[in-house]
Image 1: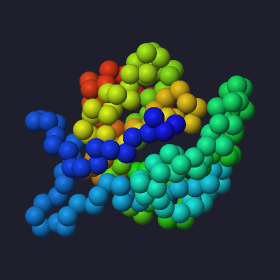
Image 2: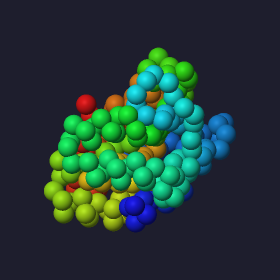
Image 3: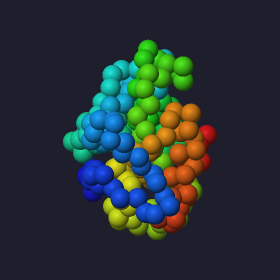
Image 4: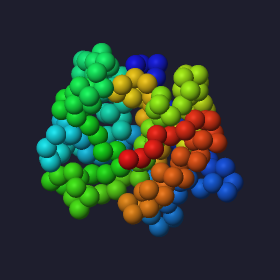
Amino acid sequence: MQNSTKVTNLEQPQPEAGEPLFDWGTAEESAPINPVEIEFSTAASSVGTGVGSTMTLQAWFEGIRGGRWRKVVEQVRAERDPVKQAEMKRQELFISFPSVVLNGGKRSDQVEKYTGVVVVDFDEKDNDKSDLEALPERLKADPFVLGFHLSCRGGGYAVFYLVNSSLTEHPEAYNHLSKHVINACLVMPALRR
């Protein structure tokens, strides 16, 4: 897992001309938050309606690197029955909501704050294995990537970006990033369900 986790490129990137993915604020606004300090909501599993607490991006990636959820992830990866595997993910896997801070539950009307973090998933079912194997090096070269890690099942990647959109613009930001990644990394993002 350690080789597939990246927490670099956290300095303010310089967007290419015509592609303003970020707006780091105006002179009237306070200095932008360091992306590793962005807090988002988490929950012990996807079962139930409650959320647990908040976590920073730095704590999320350190948890992955340090093996905080490794035992459960390895159990999910070892399960070959897709139905049982999906149920294990739903019941046992710690989940995160990097785009939002929630207050009291997981419904959209319980969003307290939008973080501007967009996670784009890349799955093995949508891409050739060779493209996914080359993806980490391509992501390391992408100045807009905050970080990435292997997916729970181990056959894809979750890639974290920071955008200057609002919550209502989140789907549009996801679509924009999907196009960016297709061009920059030559892989297809997972379709949002």
